[in-house]
Length: 234
Image (tube, rainbow, N blue to C red; front, top):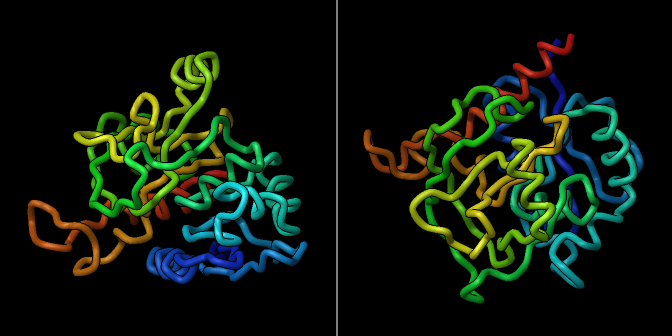
């Protein structure tokens, strides 16, 4: 049976259609979920996409974290459903306390867009099992509030328990502590990251690679990873 992966649209979401396309490219069925509903429509996994939900009022992701659909998302995540938060979606996961820490304005106080090198730190989550630990990948990055912060005790726990999923390589674009670009929860089913894997899934439209311009497709493996994870659970 074809896996059903929900993509939540909030007011101000920008990359929900891109996430749906990435899901379709790996042979799964994208399911549009609406922020004001309480119905997950029997999906197998969920993506919280990038954008500027509710205009980033209060804090980025703060209002979206208490949207009606998030009651169901939090409950499903706590029961083991794979959930991926991309950029604004990562901010929503943090604000909903599905991931620890916080995300603040970039250190240089400016919006940044770049093809960002990352190193894979955890390759055993629902969304990263098709990578290898220590592997370097390139994923587009675009954010204004991407600086990851946490207190010293939380950072020590994240590092010690292997919850850092990705780290910036070469350039830390936003001042994130410990160069953290993405996290996983302890169970490995919830992952959040600031870069946008859905923008690196098709040759001709992704970041540059050594092989050719715009040929990078490293982001596709996030979505093949979750399919592998769902297959393993059956």
